[in-house]
Length: 461
Image 1 (cartoon, one colour):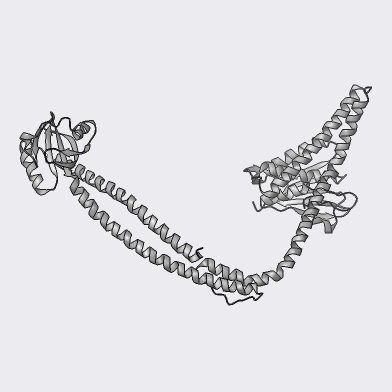
Image 2: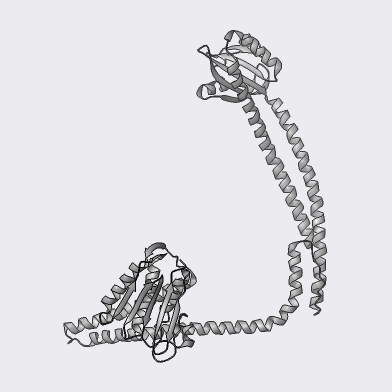
């Protein structure tokens, strides 16, 4: 079985060799394509220049000969019928009609015609580029060709230089992989010695690893290992306590839900059983009982909705939809709805225009919960105000003990004593979550037996 440094060295060398080979092969085709494309563009540019320079059809022969003497390319000028009227490399008298040559046909269809083919006249393969031009209102074709052999030689010269660089990189890579493997071997040897000492219950602190950041981290973790072993028992005790706390919280949740659901469920069962057992009940009593069943069913549904909303608020899954609105108008509407649903109660409101950028629906839930809370725990008038950007709800109810105030917004918390139990323990939790999500804070002032004031300020918004 190979050692770690041998695995690393061999795989690194194999990867490098494969990479160089793949890159070398792919570069061959890429450079070849680039070189051919470069010459094709060169021929097109040459034709563009020639089409501007040539203006007299009588000088075409001389122009072609001069072009051939000064360049390695071949220039042919062909009339509209396909007859070669000038050529820099061949006797036009022996040239066939070029009307059906591939590059000529393509130049009729587009701006340029490009073709690679074998020339019987010059007995070699050529890259041919042709373009149709007009000289004194007569169509002509300018064709420029260059031998593929010339392009290929230039390409091989370029690629051989690149291949040489690849070979040098490959040798450098092999040398580097060997040195890299040796470094890893040295570090692993130190680690083996250190863990051997640790197995003998000796805790060395002189381990020094510095080849790579990962080895440095191993060094740090190794030195911390002995200290962490001493703390293991303490961590276990904390973990056990955390499990007990989670179990107790789960029990509190089940207890809170079962307690709140017990009364409405008992009412639903009682009324339903009476309706089922007594066929002699009058229509009015049946309707009344059904209304009671519907009311208690809706109460259970509302409690479930509040519980779901509380979980979403707590986990951050609920996204705020911010809009700008008048908080005074919102509070006025909420107060009006409570006056309709609680006609026997006196609910006073005094407010002023206060623009707020927040989630209107969430703020409405917060305001409604605070007012409902005041009505529930007070038989006296409830005062609601919105002045100086401070919203407050005051009652003269049973009040809250000083040591309970900081706890009543906790989820499923129930105040001890005879009356104040915060329903399912979610009403004020809603308010607290909603306000915190908007960067606001719920303020609670209360005196046991005298009443409470719940408020929040929108000044920070």
